[in-house]
Picture 1 (cartoon, rainbow, N blue to C red):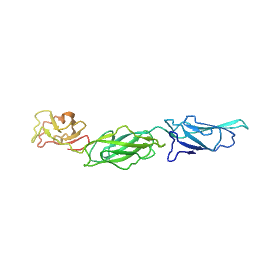
Picture 2 (picture 1 turned 135 degrees about the vertical axis):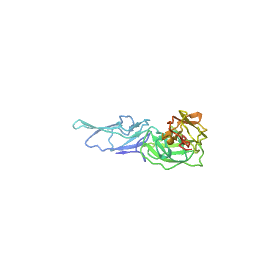
Picture 3 (picture 1 turned 135 degrees about the horizontal axis):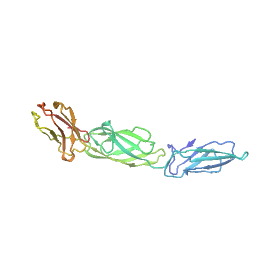
Picture 4 (picture 1 turned 30 degrees about the vertical axis):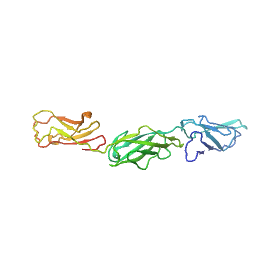
Length: 281
C-alpha cells in the first residue's frame, strides 16, 4: 500500500511518505520514479517499506507510473517489473463561483439578487479535501455541502444588508494533497432589494375603440431597463399574456399589436415588470 502524509491522499511539494510492497524470490533490485515525481531512498536496496520524497513537480499525476521496482533473480537470470501510480497533486487549485437565484433555475456568474436565500456553487479545477473557507461583505454564507470538486452553500440576503455590489473574498480551498488555493475567477454579485416602480403607462385608456390601427403600449420605469423582463395581459383583446420588450437606457418597456376591429375594451391591460434581480412592480 501507499502511506501518504497525514490527512492527505496525494503528495505535494517535498512531502515524505512510503510505499509498502513485499517482493520474494529475488536478489537484485532497482527502484525508480519514471515520471520523476519522487526521490526513492536506497534505490538499489530492497526494503518492503520504501521511503519516498516528492520532488515538487508542480503538476498533477493520477495516471502515469511514478514508482517502479525491477526485481531480478540471478539463479535463473530472470527479472520482473512492478509499476505503481502514487497520487501527486502539486498544483494549487482555483475555482469559479456561480449563484442560483432563489435556489431555483440556472447558476449564474455575477447575478443580480433580491432579498432571500440563494445557492452558492463553488466549482474547482481539482478535487477538494475539505470544505471551502469564504467570506462575503453582503449577506451571510451558510454551511457547505458537496463532494469532489463541487461545493454548495446558502447565501442569505436580508433587508438590512447594504444594497449594491457584494464581493467574495478570503477564499481557502485545499486539494487532496492539502495544497492551498486562493484564486476565485469571479468574485461579485449585485444585491437589489428595491422593487421596480412603473412611472406611467401610455396610452392610458378608460374606453378603447380600435380604430387607430397598430397600438404600442409604452411603460416608463424611470430607470434603465436593460435585463428587465415583463408581461402585459391582453386577454381583453383576445391576445392573452404577451412579453414586453425592454428598451434599456431609454427606461421603457413596450409592446405593439393591432387590435381586432370588433374589440371594444373598457379597462386598460395589466402589466407586470421584473428587474434584473427578479423583483417585481
